[in-house]
Amino acid sequence: MFFLAPEISQDFVFLVMMSLVVAVRIAAYYKEDLAKDLAKMIPFALLGIFLANTSLFTVEQFVERLDGFIPFIGKIAVFVIFAIGVEAILRVLFLIKRKFLPVAEVKLEEEIEKTIDEKMKIKVEQIEEKQKEPEDNLEEKLDETEDKLDKNTHKNQK
Image (tube, rainbow, N blue to C red; front, side, top):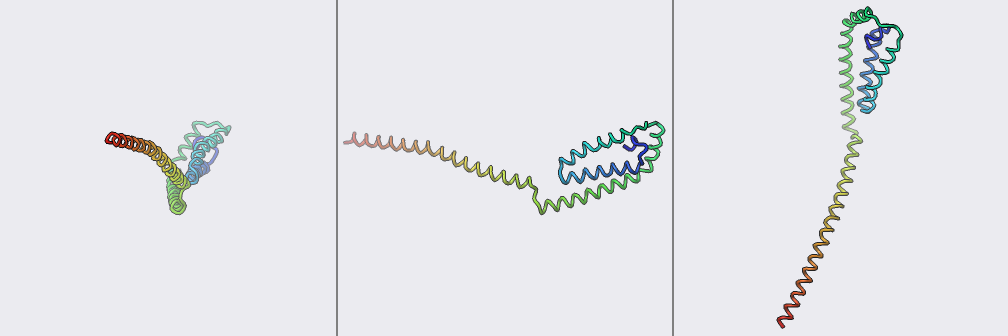
C-alpha cells in the first residue's frame, strides 16, 4: 500500500494499515470469526481502493517512495510498540473477563458432559437389567430342574 498510492501521504497510508492491524486484534478478542473475516477482506478492499486510483505509478515515484520509507522506519517501531501495548492490555482484560465470566463454550461443554453422563447411567442400568433377566431365567430353570431332580430322587427312594 505504501508504494501503490504515491499521491496519498505516507502518514495516512501508515495510519490506515496500523488501524487495520489493531482493529483485527481487537476483533480477535471479541469474536474470532469476525477477526478472520476482517483480516481477509479489508486488505483486499483497501488494495482495490488504492489501485482504483487512475494515476500511473512510475519508477521515479517508486524510488521517491523508497527514499521516503527509510526515515519512516522510526514510526514503524513506534507502531510495533503501540501494537504490543494494545495486545497486552487486551490480554489482561481478556484474562480478567475469563476469571469472572466463564466462557459460554465451557458452560455448554459441562452441560453436554452432564447430559451424556446421565444417559450413560440410564443405558448402563438398562444393560444391567437385561443381563439380570437371563440370569434370573437361568436360575429359575436351574431351580426347576433341581426341584424335578429332587422329586425324581424322592420317588425313586420310596
